[in-house]
Image (cartoon, rainbow, N blue to C red; front, top):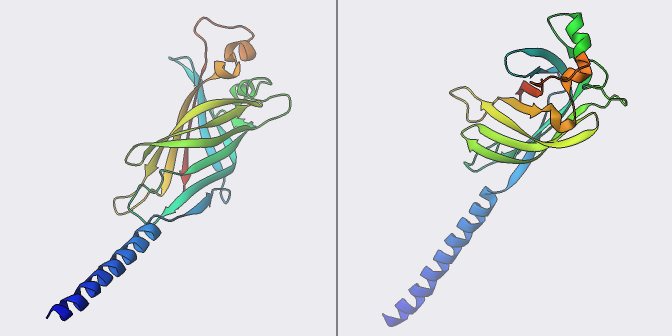
Length: 209
């Protein structure tokens, strides 16, 4: 009997060790991540913008180029977009105001968004914070006329009731033009105002699946 106990005990320990080892391997592979890159260059992507000082604004649209959204592939149950990366460029020469040619000409005034070297407005994310379900703050660097500043974008994932992850993103931001040394009123109208037209709002919707 004692001999049987001596044989059974090591066997039990061995079985437990094998099961634990298998679980550890499964758990570690469960956390592995790949990356899928979503490019929106297949169709024309537009962005909506407007500048305002509060009670009035000038809305306009532009063409987005080199849009890239990198989304980690997760096989666990974590937030699928919490480590995404976003980058894009906006061509200020493509700006257009639907209200008429005169306002389009004003928004394309040299020195406002169009620099001497025709630089594009660019953005590249640096880090991301999950604010809630399908809601993120994306920090990054935005360059206007070659001047780079830190900005915050707020990204909302849009999904249907039966979808497990977002099929599109709404990207929004509010930026102070004075951060880039841009005095809208002086450049466009030749004179600064007491209540400066300084806020630049941006909004675009991006399909990711």
